Structure formats: C-alpha cells, structure tokens
Length: 133
Image 1 (cartoon, one colour):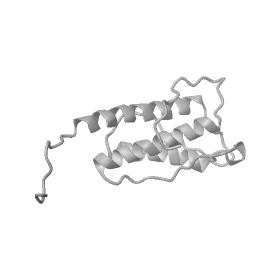
Image 2 (cartoon, rainbow, N blue to C red):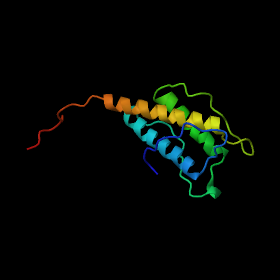
Image 3 (cartoon, rainbow, N blue to C red):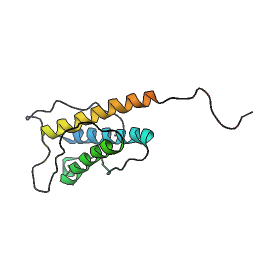
Image 4 (cartoon, one colour):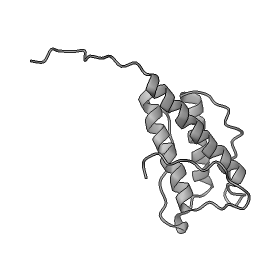
C-alpha cells in the first residue's frame, strides 16, 4: 500500500489489530512522510513495511518505529499535541486500543494540516527560466 487510507480513530478494548490495520498505519505514515518532505525537506524516518500474514506481525521495535516517526514529524515539520508516546519492549505488553487511538488520531491530524499547508503554498502563474521557442 502506498496511498492515504482513512484512519480508524474509534478503537475500543474489544478491538484487535490485524494485518490490514498495520498496513493502513504504515501506508498512512509513508504518505505523510512524502507529503512532509515536499514541504519541509528530508525528515528523518525509520523504515516501515507492510506485512502479508500474522507470522510477520510487527514486534515491539516496529511499534517503537511508528512512534518515533510521529515524533520526527512533530520535531521536524510542526508540533502538535499528540499525547504521551508509549515505549514497547520485547516480551512486554503490546500496543493497545489507547495507543492505537493516539497513533491514528495523530496521523489524521497531520494529514489534515499537511493538506491545508500544501494548498496554501503560493504558485507562480508563469515559469521562470530560459525562453523556449
């Protein structure tokens, strides 16, 4: 996946994350990275990849990379109040509905702001440079 997919921002304790949820989060973060790079230059980023099956399900390090990428947007593009980052550890508690709501709500906020900023970038109605015949 590589495009924008509407985030799920209404996670409940009964919800369980699945492959499609992870891939949506990765796709949206990669979309935000491309959009932010157009406006702010190269933003430091941890690589995130789609998964194909539950055998490949993300570990603690990959969830920490998601949070680190959100922090990178916060530090290098524009600061938002996106809540307290949770650090995950091997054999520790994994991502829960509270953290998923925080992550996907932040993703949605960033997308809305980046879209608005991109629409406000002034564009000259003519091309500067050498005259073409």
